[in-house]
Image (tube, rainbow, N blue to C red):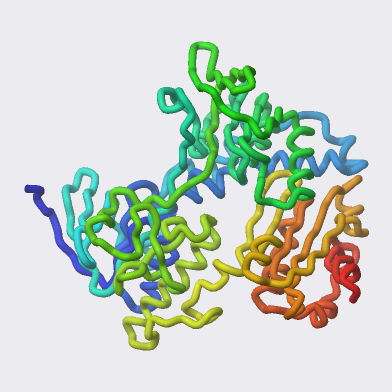
Length: 477
């Protein structure tokens, strides 16, 4: 029998100390609940050390250099390529060299209790933790346990892949070197961002995609990114089928069903992620809200069939984006605290303090390629599937602000309008630095600002935001 070294009770327990887990724990403590935060790896999680921050640190120098090359005057001052060593050292600074002591200090200052180790549920409101070099511990929650365990990469079934070593996104964002050649399997956000980043750092990059690059994006936006990849030397091959993968002293060999093959120093597999729910003991709880792979949660993050178990962020499986997970965390933490105090009955009206309504109607997302793609809200297809009478308006981004921003600026913008309510329900922007246009669209969607009122939101001249005026004019305003 395993010896239990300690046993403690808290008002709430959070499993997973990534950005999402930290946020929900902070809200719980601010709501007056004693809270235990449990983490098996680095406090700060995937986003801080292997995803959002290091990947964008790898991407940004190439974007800045390309921007300088796209302007007469600064173009002539650019005489060299990126210094890959400096880029990697700057990347390391954003991860604090994979040292989480600063994050641990924040947890301490926030009055959150922290325990390192692997945790799993052994019963209602009870967690067992295997702590490194410290034995097994039990922790009980008086009110709630929150799962903030993030997600794991999914690996495609390709003959030979399981038998070799290859990069996932973690290895790509933390690599101490730039390989001479890199093959990327995957055409989603992570694979596409990293393919371009490594091409700009000096790798000979081949990107292999079963369908189309960024296949869920509108074609005009996707075409701009595809052109950007090819301009940077990425050998982009879409609609491919894989035959076999192997590794030998020459490198990694990817064989395709058309008979061609690619050999490179490294292979990056970036084909999506899935909620990290294995080995959490969920199967033993027999909850209606868990089907063996995914959790079903309500508007406040509570798992169906339970009055004490919650899930937020990637673990909840709704929207696998850090900012949206933190949004869920704030709402769930506040909802739990309010329920304990008796000021919340567990039923959250849409757009209220305890409802994660934006998960369904106003999720902002940015593809940090060059050019960028920024989206928020529902696509045309999603809105029509919801029964909305959709009015679409789109045009190239060609205004005074864009012409000043870059010589031969190439961009595209689209709005999806609810024709019955005369409000924006979706927006897409593609072009250099269009991420900075996104929050205005997010506010318009969340606030359900009518087009007649939006007409009075005058964009400053000369900025790229003038595209808003052109879109509204095209709608007849």
